[in-house]
Image (cartoon, rainbow, N blue to C red; front, side, top):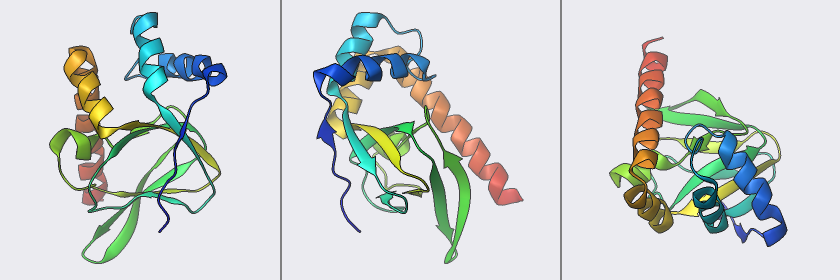
Length: 155
């Protein structure tokens, strides 16, 4: 598996990142200057279909925002791989491993060409400490995801 290569977002694209962050539930309603600063810390990766972004059981090192494209979320249980969800523009992933300092809970693989914005573990944790409301919103995303995953395993 190739490492996902991320790149610095050029200044001309920062306004796109900021505008997109405003539309993502986790970041919605944050003051403009805060979003500008946050946007400047993101990097981006453009990925081809079939690219494994993160692998279940590995150590988390980044938080991801899906800028565009479609990805599948896969979980291996008892040796069987199952699709438990999909991700598209505006969705986030990778937060659970960073919040809990635990291994990745799923594998995420691109279905289509995808553009992702990434934030390093260190930057992600610094922002959570600096902006308590961000931590609350990310915790809520994790809770909803855990409920959805539990529901999927019951079916």
